[in-house]
Image: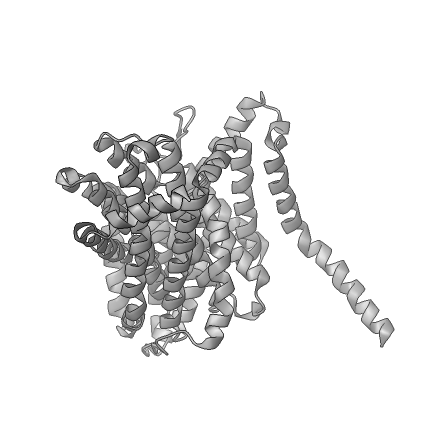
Length: 502
């Protein structure tokens, strides 16, 4: 009841005209920034840090939260329509959303994503209010073996369900893990695959990899096949979700937060892992398996709901422990320190008005984002009517601007082109792109957690499976790997029983 009364006081703070204005500015900026490939919410918050020196802390953090959620909304827009993720959390949306857009159902994909973000954000924020202390305790108890097990699960899951074969999925993952090796060894400082370049010592930013594999690779692939196609504009389709769409997505909207919120609260890759796992879950549970890869709406609704809920989970660790689990949380932590505020267990007591005002503003921001994005879904979908040569020329331009903005180095443009050529080659030989992206995102962190776990156990492999949590995760991995082998005898037994009955 104390949390409820504090939340009501927070609404009193968030609904003042000045704070409502900052929330509206935040969601508008976030949506606009999320649409631009390569310029994600972390960069937006970082760029706005100097601008907010003169602002009151509560208003500044309400605007930052609006940018965070708004960028996730906007990132799914270009991911769905143009196969160009605005940020890494929107990568999965392209897998089913872009085929939907190409078949004339772009507006439905955008509407499913918008409602998914709203549902995930609302449920995640309610869980933030109710479960913050418990989830924080869980995050503290999870160690290096558990983190490594979670990442191995993500690797196995994503290579098992994507592409025409597991071998191709594994090959794609190995490409991503190799790209993730570029830079300095995090524990020894040894240079790896830098070819003597100081600019590559910090590694290749995941935004450059995602934009290169998706945007540049897609643009080159379309350019190579443009003369073989009619160039006919893709129809926009109906502007809203039909009854059948709602029947297929409402369970996905509710399942997403159950996956996204816990993962947001632990430092295991931010929104990327839960969106991947949500995609895997929805594919396993779907009754329309023939549509996957061709535009299954559940593959948009579930991951987008999980991504939004994970953002609320991220705030749990940041506010209660001072532990940033994503790049955005790290920048927001720097913003707290800029104002002389230290997040942690005492934050709710010392800065009660700011914290509960921030949490209440998340509810307000979700409503503003749904009101902004749902009516605009048909408008955004009309981007597909632009002639493809002009459309993909624009994509190449914004992709190059976004990649250059990451580090301000000309070498980033060369790396972007090389990775784009890799993406083109992957499309040519049928390798799924997503395992490569997850390999880049999680590979370095998985290596770090593996080495930490082995150091703790003095080099014994037994240290990787010495917790109940890690044993449970490895049991799930074994089930995923063995399921195709177990399914064949089960099917044969079932068919033999039917034959005997007949």
